[in-house]
Amino acid sequence: MIVAEGLTKYFKDLVAVNGISFTIEEGEMFGFLGPNGAGKTTTMRMIQCVSPVTSGSLKIFDMDSISHPREIKSLMGVVPQENNLDMDFTVYENLMVYSRYFDIPREEAEKKVEELLDFVQLTDKRDTMTESLSGGMKRRLILARALVNQPRLLILDEPTVGLDPQARHMIWDRLRLLKKNGVTVVLTSHYLDEVEKLCDRLVVMDYGRILVEGSPSSVIEEYVGSGIVEAENYPELLECLNRREASYEVIGDLVHIYTNDPQQIAEYLTMKCPISKMSARPATLEDVFLRLTGRRLRE
Image (cartoon, rainbow, N blue to C red; front, side, top):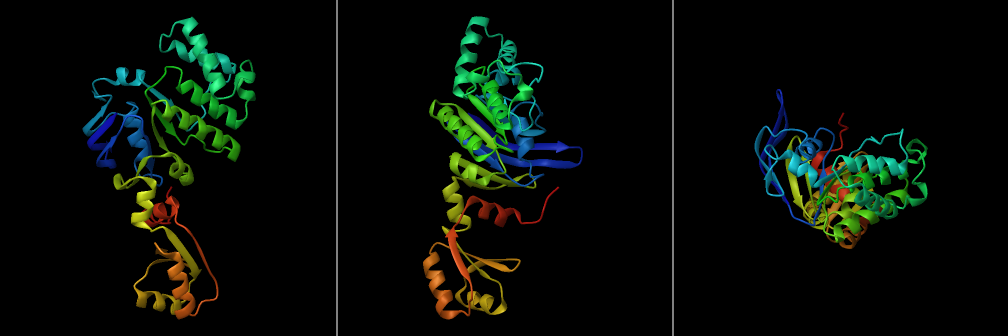
């Protein structure tokens, strides 16, 4: 579906994306992760054909993104991070007006809009002014709008930002249904549990480069391990871990010990190290993200 080779993007002297290569298969749900300024949003904008490629190649639907942007956009749906619905229209009118951009015949558009309202569970809000909707309803309407042209590729930038748990799970259910029906989904999100639950594969980017690529489970296993043991940080514990050559990271007043056998590590700490408090938990994608990109805030 998407093939990028040596993809590069400059903004004057700034290298936003630095020669990355990746492929996204048809029917796959693929995630782009990274801290602010990592280059993921710029990459998504190039895929959307709204930001031209500086160098390298980017093919979507086997078409070049520079020479065939209109054809590519006609087969694509986009859910932006910001709310850009038309507040002067009702829910129904937002979708009908949008259908005109794709020259969909009115009778066909009316049928499609009704199907989409049902799909995102907004049928009872069809005649409600958009400004009166809750945040979750607006996100669902934006998702419906992105599906008006029956896209083969759906691009989502922070699809559930600011939503409550019920609204998030409803969006997740809709995305799984779309994937089941063959739609390729590409998303970026700061909710790492979202990416871990939804995506078949992902990349973690930083400073314009891809650091890792793989399925969520394989990335967690490779870079952190299956579990993490947390203990209070003090010199005697670090000496004890160094004798064992354990993989760990000091985070303030805590030590995170990365392992594929949390029980064995916990038993070792209990028997061999002076320790007052300890806990074990499964490793997550967030642990990988922080270990690879650091814990310093980015603006």
